[in-house]
Image 1 (spheres, helix red, strand yellow):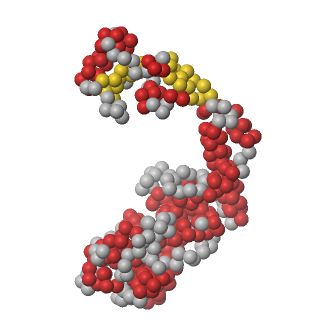
Image 2: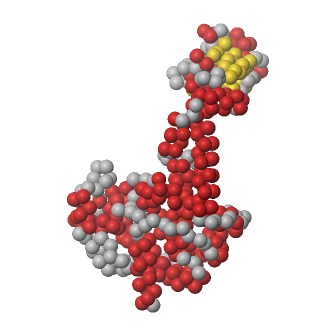
Image 3: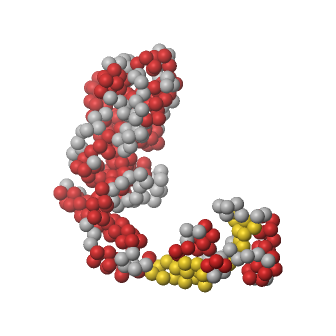
Length: 397
């Protein structure tokens, strides 16, 4: 048992070292089978072959991150939790769902001393930008959290992986939140101690699981950085660079091959009426449905709001709200009664929709073409690098 505990201490040290460079790993049948069970929670029909491909692709993605964006391995966002924090939650799910290990028997111990006054004393003033300076880090490093965890952990090591919002709340003295995070870490260490011999008995490496967890967590961000997936708030320098290299000839070829994408509604014929009271607009709309729009205008003695355009609307008029509205309707579709920005109640109809194509030199074409071509090139580069990595490591999918 002592030898196993020493192994766990070493393993925890490796898990918490975010700068450790991962070497190439082969996965045995037991590891593939375990991950298939994990993935089946979200995709019941995933095959063993697809699981192996996914596992190796995750490893390839981590290699790409190590080469080009090592900061991502530590944290996806300055305001979010650290990658290691997410890895621990991921592994806890595996321990629970696959090994039936529960956190219910893990006790937090006596944490009464860690109250609001203690937090306010040991934590420095919260930085306005959420980034600690050297003096603040040194102050927290001098506070050891003795007896709480299996490994020696100081206050900075404990608090740094937390999200900006959680850290801010701790600086306000929210001791219950501090205790909650302490218990989470204690639960992870306790379950890791119980899970390790069970997994080793099956021939499953904890280090491999940690890497697989990191790969799944970072997969969307890395693929977005590489330009092959779209993810909100992730800018791809690969796509930015590729867009700058696209020639006019490539844009022209893309336009010719995808001209249908650049078809646009250029002109519509529209009729409309505006009222100060909603009930008037509703009655008018009912009259239109019973006869026609032009008849309803005559009967109600209303001025056509599109008369100044001679009822022919073009894109150059689209700064007007009512014109924009006409462009959103289907041909011959009578609108509902709608409130205008000026507070009037409006009913309109449009027909005779005329379509045209943007020219190959139009900025809309150039913008969309550059985006699409860059994505195609990024995907080609990704596949080439992915295949080269497989060959280099003798991976057979």
